[in-house]
Amino acid sequence: MAVFRTITIDSTQILAPNDFELERVPIYEGEYTSCTGKTFADLVGWKYGEQKLVWGTLPTDQLRFLIGLTGQHTITFTGMDGQTHTEPFVPTSVVAMRGRETLPGGGELWHDISLSISFIGANA
Image (cartoon, rainbow, N blue to C red; front, side, top):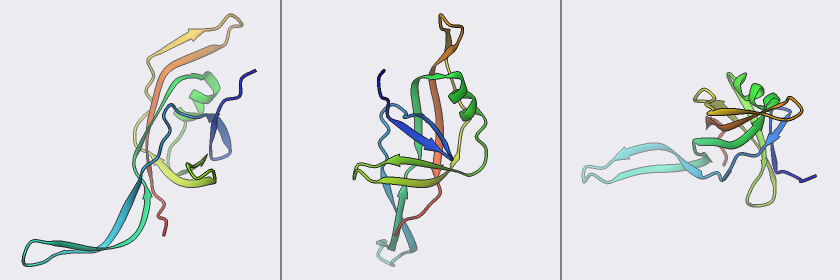
């Protein structure tokens, strides 16, 4: 049996999305523009940028879990630094999917699933 990378949303493990690479974006405070038109601000932290999560396939139970996401949640993943990170997020789109395949045992496999999320936590 193959071992798949997983992420955890709240306490539920699901397959990691394709190309799950998060970008850090700066958080600025006290931004102002000088009389010469130059913009200044204090860098006060960072957060992960908005992310579109995309899966090639997911089983029905994991798809149903994603469809049920509303409000604030946490996602836990292993970062590029090899450490485990937990970050709060909110879904910013509905779950989209393109198709379904019925497996020989009667189970279903869903194809081309996507969900957009926005990280709401700040890091120093």
